[in-house]
Length: 453
Image 1 (spheres, rainbow, N blue to C red):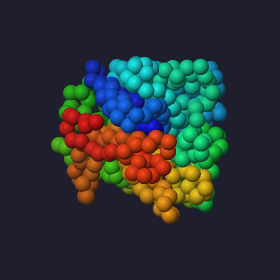
Image 2: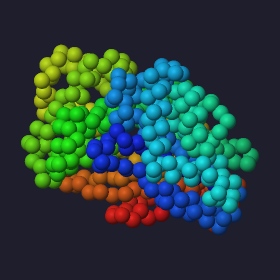
Image 3: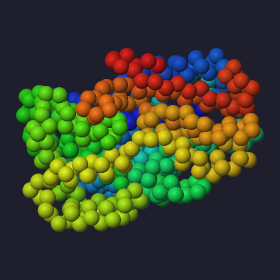
Image 4: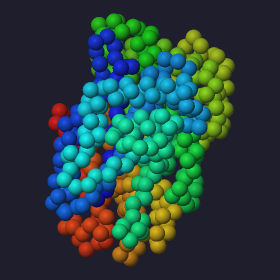
């Protein structure tokens, strides 16, 4: 049985702490302990002999950490340019250490390190990198550090970028990716125009920086960081409205749809849009002026495949002109936020999954593609030719979700959770219903303090 989890985004909270106030968005280890118990019960009931537990990317939140902002280094650097012993490697290792130091994360990692204690069947742990933990594959020391966190020892080799699982006849039947491969804003090449996506995409394409790396740090982390620099911790902590704005600035990744992000920020309860803009305008100005001076940003923007070349030239021209040194106009922020929201836009990826070479080749035996990345859980039929059904499964996320209403003026708070079990063809069970393989998928959201498992 294959169990797939992705987009857990274990994060450090030290860089967002102000005063004694800490903003820890990590899940309690009890949630994972309970989930392991559920998986174990499931395996025993269906007489499963082995579990392949796949952590399918964006498990560690390396890119979106304000620790990057303490010096000139940024996460939009190609993996091959991160050298052993370099400042970039030291920054990445410090972020990983800060993530591990979070109490909730440390307790959860201890579960993975002793995972055999929670199962009555054999468990094999697999780990692939996504776009937010891409740099986890940069150097041998980083890779060995991450492996130790999860109790995987004995190798400094690069992590796999994808996995193909085979039946007992060694025929492939399930392809697992992180899913950013289908998203040109968060992958270094644009595969949406490729008629047939090869299973084995070159490692450099996974290791190169992309536009999403820029938006993740410069908007997702830097805005709240500059907000504190501008107003000061004490002022924010003593002002209810400013504290509410700060918390909204940190919720960048959770708003859905992503086009509602600026509206979410400007509709902070109890604060007028005009006052909110007055308070956050300096943060946006600092971000834009910092980008205008950053050569790494210029290099990454130049090589990205997700931004129209004309837009790219105009944007770089505006930034280099220096006309926004004293303040950035609201119209430009709206334009930039539109560009940023496109870089994390949520939509079904099944359209591009259909272009997988292993799916197009009806003799390959692959009937299932599993990925995450979008935070949008789904099960979609790819094709059903004869008796052969092919499915795409998106694992969603276990993060919080902030949904917007239709006019983008009101927002909620939901907790998401999706579970994906894929059964090998040789694992005949009650769910197979006569088919050669099967999967069990559960997805939902909850409201309030209880997260249903």
